[in-house]
Amino acid sequence: DGVLRLGGPPALFALGSVGQVHWGLDFRGVSVGGREVAAARSAFCDPSSMGAGQLTACGAIPDSGTTVIMAPTEHLKELFESICTAWALCIKEAEAMPRVPKFQVLQVLLERCEDWAGEAGFSGMPDLTFHVAGAAGRSQELKLPPEAYILEVEQEEVHYIKKYLMGVLPVRVPTTTGRSRRVCMPAFGEQQYETQQNGPVWIFGTPFFYEYQVGYDLRATPPSVSFRDEPCGACSDGAIARAPPALLAGQ
Image (cartoon, rainbow, N blue to C red; front, side, top):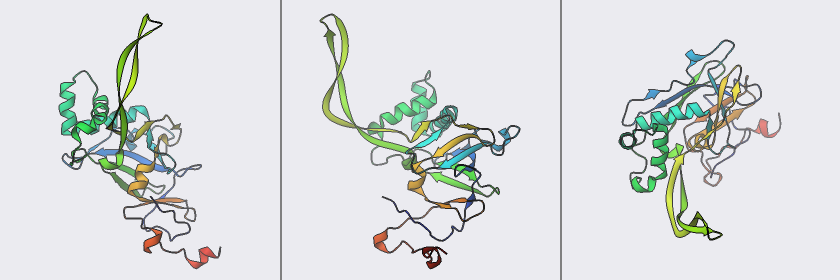
C-alpha cells in the first residue's frame, strides 16, 4: 500500500534534478556494509572516473513504475561481489565453490533462502547506501536494508522424469510435486543506458519507494526530487495533510 499526494508543501530537503528529459540525479556509487562489517565504497560511479565532457560519473532516475533497481551488468557484478564479501554466510559458501565467481555464489545462496533464512531472516546481510546528489551538489545518502533489496517468492517445486520421444529419444520432463518453496533473489535487473553527459544511468525502482517518501517538485528551479525517511501515513488516520488553499484554487 502507498499514498499519492498532489500539491503538498515543498520538501525541507530536496535535490535539484540534473536531467533535461527525466527526473535525474547525480549518482556517486554504493557503499556496502555498516551492520557487521565496515562499509566499503564501490569503484563504479566514482566522481574521479568522469571523462571529458561528463557532468556526472553516473545518473539515477527514481521511477515508481520500475519494479526493481536497473543497472549496468558490470556494476551489478561488482555490487553482488561486494555484498557477498560483506556477508559471512556467502564467504563460507564461496570458499566451498572456489571456481564460481562471488556474484554468482550470492545468487545461488539466495535461491536457497528457505534453507537458511529462518526467524533471523536477512539480518546477517549488509545494508546498501546509495550516494546521490542534486544539480547544485547537495548530497544525500539513501540506505536500503536487505529486506528492501531482496525479493521473496513462493515457487512450486518440480522434479524431472525421463521419457522417450517417439519411444527412442530420451527427454527430461518436469512434473509438479504439489509443494512450494521459498525462493529469494536480488531486486536488481540489467540494463545498458549510456549518456554522454551523465554516464551510465541507473533506475531507482520500487525498493526506494517502499523505504522513502519520494517527492517531485515542478515549482522548484530546477525541478527537484526529495527522499524522506518517515512513514507516509494513510488517508484514514488523518496523517495526510491537505494542500494549501492557494494550490487548490489554482493560484
